[in-house]
Length: 239
Image (tube, rainbow, N blue to C red; front, side):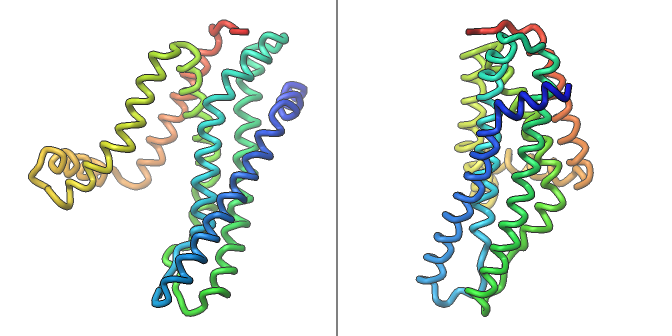
């Protein structure tokens, strides 16, 4: 197993480098944007760590999409070269988890540096939210959950092709278009259909205790991991 992990690291090392590049690049873009905003908004009394925020968004986006796409590429490559499905499955998830942990550590350092920089550049403004405690509290969980969910979606695309792709696309469009309309209707038109649906969903979410959401995320992630293995263990290699 150790040998399989070493080979997986050699195959995927560029993914880890790109992850760090996205984290740093997103953070620089956010820092520049915050500088521009604060320059023109002379009366601002508070700020948001846009550098850290953009870095987090870019890292999560890159990690999720790449895990979903790369599982197919690496599966076909490695299994066709003699790697067993079980060794590939375990090594792929472990390596991606380690890369994600490195990303969390890097984002934590970026957050501390961002906070220190903002306190110097905007000494009279208040930081609306400190992101470092959230990274320390939820970073490891996110590092584990993202490969499980994205890997399962990637395995679905491998097995069912365009049918799964269209379903995922529909869900993505609902998240991008439908959810904002529902949340907007809750405050602006509560008696409309979307407003009523949004109110019901919000009430259901509020009924679930905060700690219970961790259990739900954990269960869903484990189901995704198990589902990915079920799909991959009989998946044919496509050259």
